[in-house]
Length: 317
Ligand SMILES: *[C@@H]1O[C@H](CO)[C@@H](O)[C@H](O)[C@H]1NC(C)=O
Ligand SMILES: *[C@@H]1O[C@H](CO)[C@@H](O)[C@H](O)[C@H]1NC(C)=O
Ligand SMILES: CC(=O)N[C@H]1CO[C@H](CO)[C@@H](O)[C@@H]1O
Ligand SMILES: [Zn+2]
Image (cartoon, rainbow, N blue to C red; front, side, top):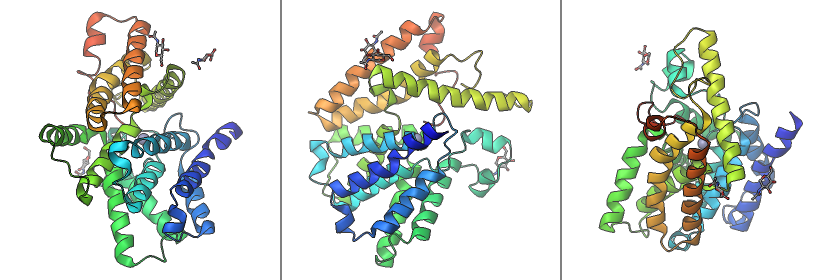
């Protein structure tokens, strides 16, 4: 698939550009040959035949992350290490994604499910794969051991935050902080928490983009769900929520996803970044796109309202 390869090459190009713009290649004395080797490995480990979880999604999330790091509330307080970690985590957060979700891996007895004991199976794999590639490429081998260990740990904590089953945990902590104005971005742990939130936002920001783009991402993610459903049918397994093409329409999946995951998260992000033209634009697009999906959904009333409720949240953005 040549077209997909050209598109997914954007991950290496984008990362080199962003690291260069921030002066991070100089700051960390990165060797260009090792950097290109590392980024090339990350890109190649994304599955280009996944309709959604491919290197293009990684590039999309990295681009969004860059924009969020530039928010005026944040930009001047972030250290070079914060920015480096944020961009790296975004680029690698879904690496080697198999195109099926965690429940599928558990019920089919996949080795990753037993390796990670049925908990954050995919996210743990994305993290450990990234650490493996960092070490293999030697990208950070010139840095002191304690610094390398710190980078690996923080990368893990950022990538594991994208596990959507932990959404409520992060959202309520974020809300508490905002209600009590208790975030102090001069403190490294608080900045790390905001990086986790920013990455979570970037990972689910598809519905905050212009309709044309947003719609294509929606179709891709649903195509990936339906493919999983087809495999489940073929092997006489129970079809997972959202994966039945006959029952779960693209509009109904999107309305549930927006109402239960994206809207609550971006409402708080908007509050945190206030005043932010970007956040307001994203909230406007989100509302317009949601209305648009509701117009597309020739659904019974209760299906639109209860979309995600009885099906549970969308599994793996
Ligand atoms: C993971 O889930 C499978 C299937 O439900 C179960 O058989 C197995 O014991 C679980 N493993 C762990 C470590 O919980
Ligand atoms: C959206 O895509 C359609 C055709 O694919 C194009 O005609 C239209 O100009 C696009 N709209 C925007 C705002 O890019
Ligand atoms: C039908 C509808 O409201 N569509 C809107 C979806 O959002 C885009 C902006 O991204 C609007 O241009 C459309 O009009
Ligand atoms: Zn993702």
